[in-house]
Length: 209
Image 1: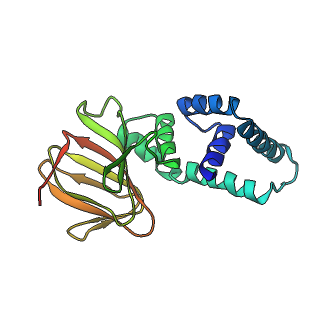
Image 2: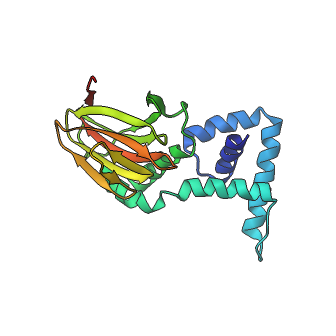
Image 3: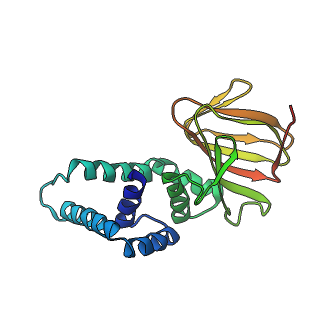
């Protein structure tokens, strides 16, 4: 169960949010299999930390640990910009980005639109009270259909490619402002999912075809 193994590794590394860690701890306490797996992971991490010379853990465990770390650090270059984008402190941004390690109905609004998943949270004090802040995950090839913005929207691309119906393509690091009343549709193009941060004022309405 790769997802389960990844969660145990993240628990051992101390990078899970408090709520998820408490839930997982209760599950570990009631599962002899999870306890044994966690002991193996902690033993491997201890050996790596204490070794004077590099030690190589078993290949399957090494791959699982590296996979987990890659997920946690893949957006590290955007953290400071996202702090300003959402007016939040670094710890809060890192916590929200960690939700991308496991995009599921547990923490996301799953299939809010076909192939599109939403993760909502509150912005900082400088963000408008009527703003919807969060992360948007669009599976490769899927579209968010044509819609009209009832207020301003800002989007910040973190992963993948965002293609507009007018042909414009946006890449990681691009920030797009869409004013009140603007109409557009977008598609996730390329091999990996599109992920972008969003601040949406007053919501949107879809346009009937």
